[in-house]
Amino acid sequence: MFEAVLFGLRDGVLVLNNSGEIIYANQAMADLFSVKLAELTGKRLIEAIRLVELTDLVEEAKTYRRPHEKEIKVFYPAEKTLLASVNIVKQEAGEDIFAIVFRDISEMKRLENLRSEFVANVSHEMKTPLTAIRNYAETLLNGALGDKDHNTEFVAKIEKHAENLSILIDDLLEISQLESKRGLGEFVPINVWRVVDRAVETLAGKARKRKIDLAVNCDNKDLTVSGVEDHLYRAVLNLLDNALNYTDPGGNVTVACDRLDGEIRIAIADTGIGIAKEHLPRLFERFYRIDKARSRDQGGTGLGLAIVKHVMNIHGGLVSVESEEGKGSKFTLTFPA
Image 1 (cartoon, one colour):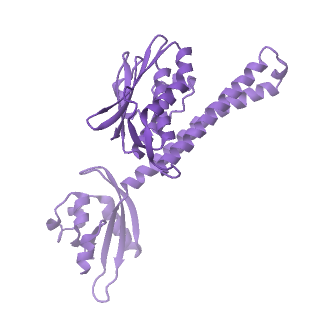
Image 2 (cartoon, helix red, strand yellow):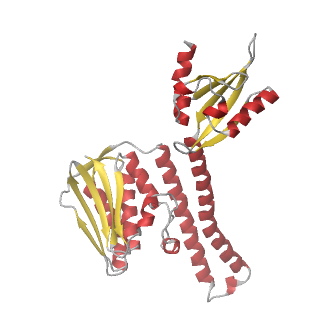
Image 3 (cartoon, one colour):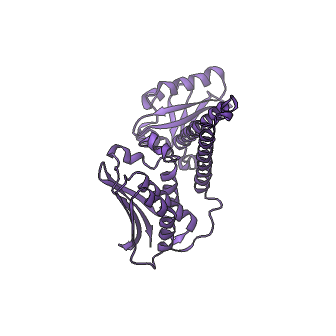
């Protein structure tokens, strides 16, 4: 019964005698290291698992007569991080044995790295507008308040950077809500045309100002999807805003919605600058920007496409992109019907 329990554990278990020979291993352990379970018993640890740091860990446990643990990197058959814990099992009669438990913490380490990167990115993104606000405020306090040729300009720039900071904070709060899935609201039937029309109406003035032809092609105005309207509106709005930002005056942006192969799709296509192939795999990462200077000039936070991806995830849908440099881009939101 005891062996049956160990055999069924998700953590890998390896038991050594005092001479360093393997006397027991479970299937999870064999899977972690991509070795055959039947070939382990009777082998020395270094012969079965060729990791010197693992052998050293066992020797430390022997020397200091207490449990030891260490993170170990494994690169075959796939790269992963394992937490190896060595415990001494004292026998009333005979030599002690050593139990090694292996826990795959690869996902935990990945999330830790993502969290660290996120904090670093947020700090960097916030520092830019805060530094500008501080510099302009100091300039005003040091005498520029009385400079009628520039004081209004400096205050306007402070207001602009404060607004950018506010938008960044709003985006951070939204992406946090989407990731945690808390407070999203009840899923209800949503009219796709109404969401598209709302987003187009919001940005119609911007399109006119930039002299971009904004067209809508949604013949079926009865298409519905299940979800939270405000989040779907935000996803469409983000894609539409990006299309306008990266399309030069005289260009075209088209929003289309239809039902195809049992799915409902909203597509936003533009005749803008397009996206190079090497950027496409990372396009929906948080704070990933292709043209950082242009993005910041447009007031972008680097979170817009990440928000779109999270919105589609919680609605059981997908966002995809087709693009070619110099010929424009097409983003498609696909919902299950």
